[in-house]
Image 1 (tube, helix red, strand yellow):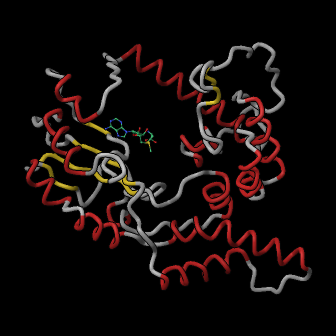
Image 2 (spheres, protein in one colour):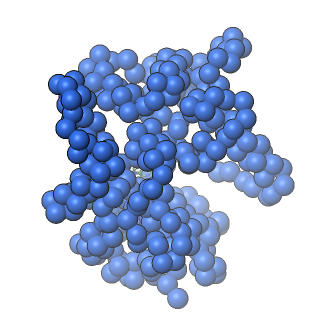
Image 3 (cartoon, helix red, strand yellow):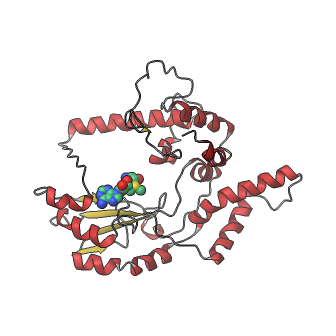
Length: 306
Ligand SMILES: C[S@@+](CC[C@H](N)C(=O)[O-])C[C@H]1O[C@@H](n2cnc3c(N)ncnc32)[C@H](O)[C@@H]1O
């Protein structure tokens, strides 16, 4: 977490934050307790065994951040009890509300949890009776893990084929080989306009700051601004995803019903394939500078073939 060789990465992230956000980020990194800034933490004296393992020490990476696990645009809407830029304080109240909703559901619905410490591909051998309307496989369809064919083949038997809406959802994170240079150029022009750096910097320090700002932000923004619909289709073809799905008895939805195709993408029918474009400066700041998404993420929904 405080490895000196990672200091540069830490500073690159922190330079994009506002001074207030930076204070809260630093405070959270140092004590790991999710509370509003300045809230007494005397009673929070028991280490979290999921984060701090007695044998292996700190278990998460230094860029793991709880803010990235939730919808930042909803988290910042929390208004009670925190300063505007105390994002961890906002997350505290947001999660308290989510946990209340969750407990409420546990009390009112018939829910059962079965936890397996298993290779996901072996689950259909373990789970004999239950069939599921939804299965989310995270990004194990990526080639670095299992690939598409084993996942669809091995998990298909667990899907409930009596429900026409049954869906297997997958995330692809490691698929985009490179963005064509023409698209990069176009995105850089948009970013230059947004950062208003057509004006020549007045001092050497200004120049250095400008270069640093552009290079650290540009990579993410290019990913987000790039309409990778065609490339993703080509990738699916290269992986023979449609042929595999057809053989297994699944069909890739053209219009998603459950998750947007891209992180922070639209669910509106005619906007699902649109490149991301964030008009609001605060939204851009939150997504590019505060959050840790790469914007290469792409979701797929497979339904049972009719
Ligand atoms: C990028 S992480 C995803 C983390 C988190 N679940 C998410 O969706 O953001 C992918 C995870 O899948 C796990 N994984 C890869 N192959 C698997 C398999 N065959 N069975 C179960 N888990 C697997 C990896 O160990 C890794 O923790």
